[in-house]
Length: 141
Image (cartoon, rainbow, N blue to C red; front, side, top):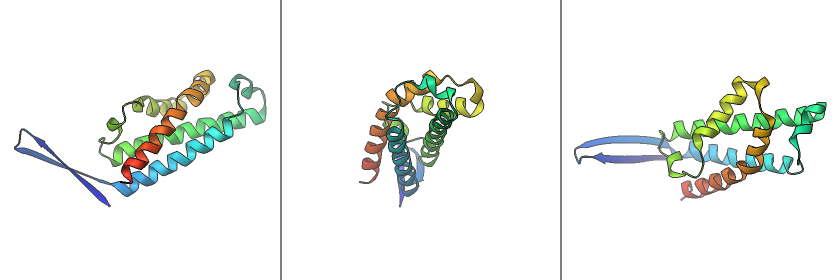
């Protein structure tokens, strides 16, 4: 299903934007599942600083970072698919920061501050999940 949004400016200039709602819904559903799995699989972690001390801990930390990369990529996709129109409708999430976190992990992997990752995991990801669920609900109307 394609969504057409007509914007009127000064009553004479008309710009037509089009985006594929199905692609956005699929992306949002993918994000929802990923975030739910991330939160469930990390719920028992109370101190991330010990993860780098063991191979299993490093594997978990790598998995968390990979999820952050995917989340950032999916947010970029939503922004692209919606012609930058959808994300501003949900201002409680700092979308540029979500995308920026992805970029910092991808381009500076050996300089990642695991405390920042843990802080985002525990305090920023749950509200993001709530907004993603609301976005899915709004798009499904």
